[in-house]
Image (cartoon, rainbow, N blue to C red; front, side, top):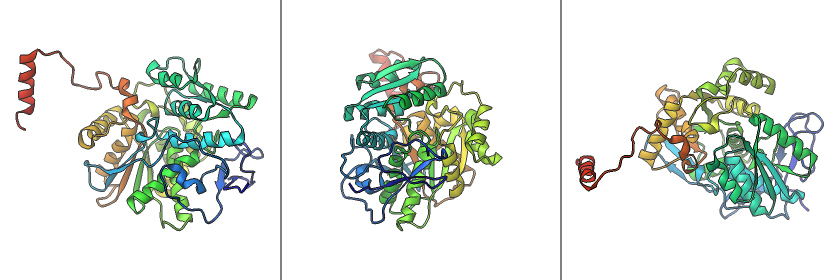
Length: 408
């Protein structure tokens, strides 16, 4: 069987067999990356698997796919040279589908038949959906107070949903412990826990290069773990290595004001996991916010993402709930796109840097819209939406319509 890629440790350089299950390097604990043989091409067709020559699934194995990828890139009505990459159009409504398709495809090739994750958000839903497609048993740990509206689809996909007492870090630790004990594939979408899945995310860069015909000047990414940003950055690096582009975009991490770990890390010169963890330890995650997917103090992929920001000449910007809500309204009312409030942080970050003069006129910017708003409607209950619904009789409704449409 010809191997399409070779895993290796970024720290010590040790190489591994393609289907050797790895989290970190067993020798030094370094992060695992992949080398691909020369001569790889982008194949005709649709979806991320036309980039198979640059994904860590050896030949001879069929991918587990729901049709992820090939999301649209559309010009925005909000500003010239602004484009929207609609990752919410993936099968389960988020960017995580790219990662999960790759991760579970590799898991099946390795002989796994079960998955475990800790997530009440996009990663949990994607795990449940792709596990169902693969015929895997699947269990998802969720916080004990997780809204039922979030876990209901996981249950429908056949996942065992377990409300878990403790913090999200407690749950992640439990997942790693039990995946090591049993033959269970951990679908956490963080490179330190699962290096395979981040390779799916980088296909966004390939698609942007194809759709634009050039490399944009700026890419704005909502910051949760940092994995989406670092994955896209790696895709642009590979385009350079292939000789298809001569530069990479500048990356901007868009995060919440109370949990602005990247912004502080850049100011303080932090580079290591320990330094990032120390910065995040000063923060309180117990906050009320509409940007629920960004409510993480410690970004697990922070080391890689911060390096991507620095190497690209990018930055991080922290945003208020008010800015997220205003950006969400602009996207819905001017572009007809309804994303989760966390995704609207990409536009809020763009508007902040544009008004501050860092993004110049004529520079092309892309917003990565990571998740669908239709899964997060419950976080937009009043008072976040100022208009209230009131029952009208026929006469009142006519009067309201006349006033509303009077200038049409």
